[in-house]
Length: 385
Image (tube, rainbow, N blue to C red):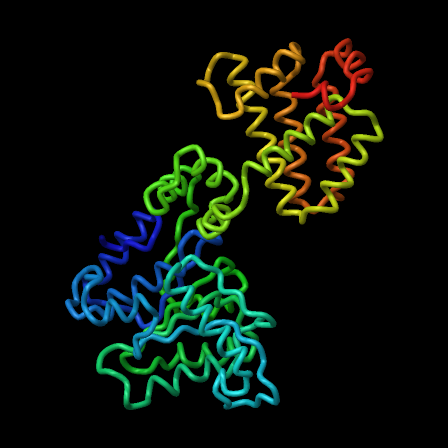
């Protein structure tokens, strides 16, 4: 399958196919797009097509070159990425030469995992910047004998991580590109690159991925059932790498936690609500709390659809029906809007306990006042959904 590692991005695939068909390949490209939209897979797939022995408009995926690029083991392909500083590392040292054996093994393992999943965000401790020694190696390796004939391709992952001296070194390379060498930069933050670097690259922009595109990819590539794929896709925020990570988390457990918070907010005493807020805020990072709120919002939407007769029987239909029966006049659109405001505040780094407290109060206000008085006289465990 052409461009098989890239999720969606039909416009990008058409563009790259056209470049290969024209045989007019630039010396430098910048692939930019929202995080997890596919910059790295696109760069690797493009490099595979450029090195493919059949020299067509796409990689054949079968020749020796394609197989080696797919495993990130082709001698004419080099990945450049953030690395930790080596002990007593000096200008001119090889990027890995002063790292410990343990650090080198970790880097190699991350490259192996990147080959298996091009969407993977490589995780290397203390690797915060792309070093000048890594960038200087581009020109040095381009002129070395001993590599195979043909193009030399360098992919600079997360190019915005280049230190200032590394950026300047790359700029010099872009101004005087080595013969038969192609540089491909990837980034989700193009504004952090030097404008002079951006201007010397062919800029290829990737579109944001929709939840529907991510859901379809999860169903097709990972054999995930539609219901789970839809839930994971929504939480991914357009980031396919994050969606893959979410597959290994326990969404059902998180959903139950969200419903427990709703149950306490609707029917709990002040003390119970305070304890619930403290437990949620202390147990989760900001991102996890945002996801918890999105799951709560989905649950309320399902309740609204069920109440209005606009949906089939959802997975948690029993709890939803109990909520609707217990709070006959609950303002579900208002509750959903309150959760939406809370999600927005979490994204803006507002104080989490205050956000959750205001949300709990807003959820209580969505109940008919007469029901609210009755609820507060009941145990929290029996009053909620």
